[in-house]
Length: 286
Image (cartoon, rainbow, N blue to C red; front, side, top):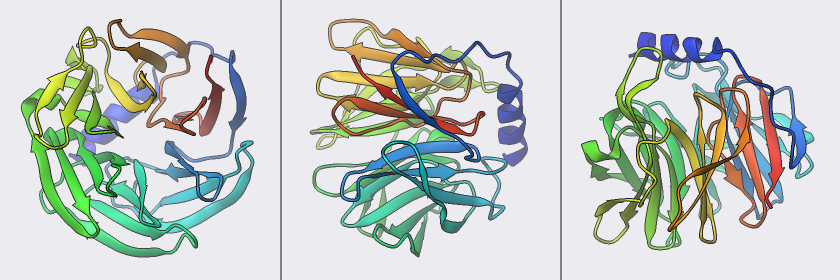
């Protein structure tokens, strides 16, 4: 598994890249190490960034979290150490939850101290995270077509279904969970036999519904929603998509390959990790 993940991401890094889009950008934070997720911390007015630093599937102890100011300056480079390949994050109850291969770390949000690690025994490749309005936390397992739910420190299987098609990005939006799928039939270079799309899971019934006109269009990574608009990134092409019900996904920005789990201030700014460039870009929305 680790060899597969390594070769896939190595192939992606070698993709010929188009010039990065600058229109609408407020700033770029540099000097990061494979930033995979950028999470807005509203309580402390800052951005928390997960750094993989190596093979995304290796338990090598190299990963860490950084803290940025809202204007993209580094506040603390190594805020939380002792991780392997940290990816998606979520905040709940004064704690930060961090997905890390087969574990979810729990970090004190005030101090950055790592206080616990929750092992998910059947996990393969945990990826993105989100929290709902009741404080429950969700984490996707991209290579197992699975999403877990964590209540406090108690993990449980939420949904396991082939129709999730390698679920990557997750975002709690009211009574539903929006899912960005990478696609079916992942190949050694991480391309797919069938590209992914956008899904919704009802949090109460666990029913899975494909979002209309948003299927099989890209190998999707991160996803967030602001009002009635969904934004999703496609890692392989570096494309940022915008989708509204009744329409079709439209490309609104292009970066080099490697755009990962996006964050937002919930109003008008997106934070886009550019994993292969070691940067996070802040975009002002129209």
